[in-house]
Length: 389
Image (cartoon, rainbow, N blue to C red; front, side, top):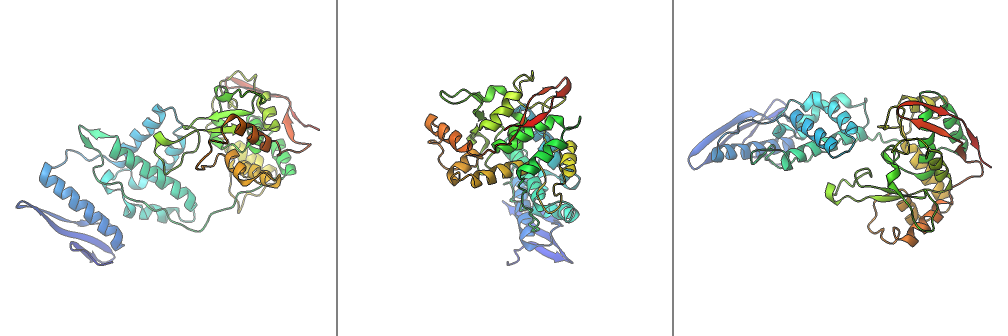
């Protein structure tokens, strides 16, 4: 890449040495970009030239907000929309020490060098990619929503931020039926009993973790001719969104429950809560907690070289569908994957056909719950589980 006018390299770092002129007014820019790569430095130069032109034409800005200020506003907006902000908070806590105090116009690819160096070998690149997606979401929020009068907090275009690829992606783990039983048995402890029902439901429905934790009785759909508890509507604010779509364009989906999943649902109908799977103290923010991890380890399931967490339940259901001979197109819909046209599947005959396919995933000794009484205000009472013939 050819070096543009206005950039000089001192040691390993590119510096800006540029004078912007408009109508006889001159504004010098002399500062470090903090970047080693010419491509990153060029982006900073373009940004600074745009800021200088804006200052010449409209006068200096009163105040430039920090990324931390924008992040706080972003999290509050998530809460106001009734969504769970915990994952965004986790991402922002991780990145805040490195860019939290920066003006939002200074948050760009070059600002993440120290962060990436500190995380290499500590966290996986998939985690860093998620943090970067949250960071870009904050910048978009600052550019499109936040205002000082009529001026957006971020007047420049939101930069593209590319996550590193450290080739450290791990495969998910498929549980066999015996391993499933062992995992459930190890959850028969005070700290993990509330996870038994949602775990069994996840492995027999393919629902995502947040779909399970947020599943409310009001989402149940009573479809004519289909068993009670077989059809549930997952609204768009709970369903995992398509990152290429705006929030207003996201869509919900139907969750189809076979006989085993329905038996778990039925065991929860007397739990005196608006949620199907409440936690000991209210809504479960997530299932992958210390109780889950302890049960997984005590069940002698692998903990190295695989993806950790509840996604393994969903993967197991997907593999079992394939083994049961369910066509690829139906597997995609049952797992809630984004496909171009699901209109036919979500019609009444389509729902009946989806349920017919989902019923193919079973075994004669599927673990079911006899009763799990749960309340967010009192200790749950565990009455055991058994193998149904």
